[in-house]
Image 1 (cartoon, helix red, strand yellow):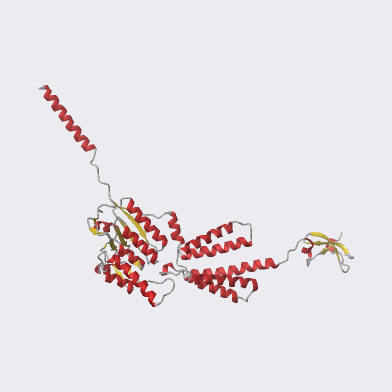
Image 2 (cartoon, rainbow, N blue to C red; image 1 turned 60 degrees about the vertical axis):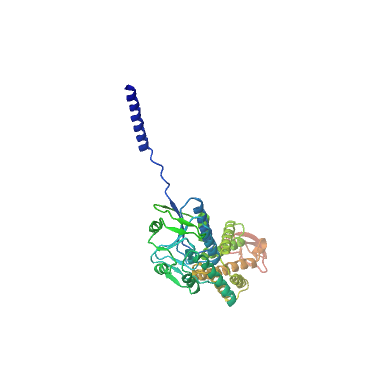
Length: 421
């Protein structure tokens, strides 16, 4: 009987230990799902292209359930847009493009990015469309124009139809620059949903089955998903700031003036080093933008006019011609597909007038300095005023600029009374 009591006692102890351990050690929980977020709120150009490609690569490698792209862009360069669309279509995780917040837009090239996404969404009070091709270097002939527009239209249809969206309404945005409000885009089957914010968007998509671009079926698991924002590197942020044509132009002009200052006063070092850095950064930034070479020729002609005005003098005519060339050159320097990528008129005018005036002034100073004869030793006394310290008959001592010299006069000169002994 005692043996049974001992066994029963050990059984009770085992049950109690099991209950305590079960209470102390919770069951292993599934990790919380998360979504990577990339904010595209600038023009579409090589810098923003690189940032989006990095965001897609990160989402594909860190286990994110999806990549959320919050977009507000006026559009931009076609080549960058094509590369960004290719990155969206090749992504291994679903891509959600959300035009937000209210007042945002997916204009021009941004419309392509919206339609290429696995999920296209917009917030109330947003718009999308106006995707007509804008030619960067002047309008081509009719045949080439037709080829470019047909090619771009085919590119849009290639993924719009694959996403089961309204190809006719999408091509209307390209052919006729038609824009759609969020409600119109939803009614035209150009987007999948309208939501107020990203939290509501992810909640509405939880459990939805989508068809990827390769035809595979994927169910979105976004319940309680946290959002991890992708932040560009310092390098990308600096490039994004520098690729603004107004900033690049200021760097170019400011750097050129500093380099000239270094040549005019050799040995200062700092202006020359800083000016060279600014010019190189400006050239690098402008290299990322579509540049008109006719505008570059205008800038070179402006520099030539300003130098000629300073050297030979043209009663202001050459300077005026140089400033006008500089103004037209800076205004047309960037072949901007959207106004946001163009040089601001007031910046171009201010830079042209200021640079023209400063250049003429500095070059004139340099020319006068070079024309002035070097005066060293006795040559420096020619034309100077002298005070007789004693009667010159015909020789004697004189005071010139605080120095006493022996002078010979053509005619006798009396000593100045103030120096009488």
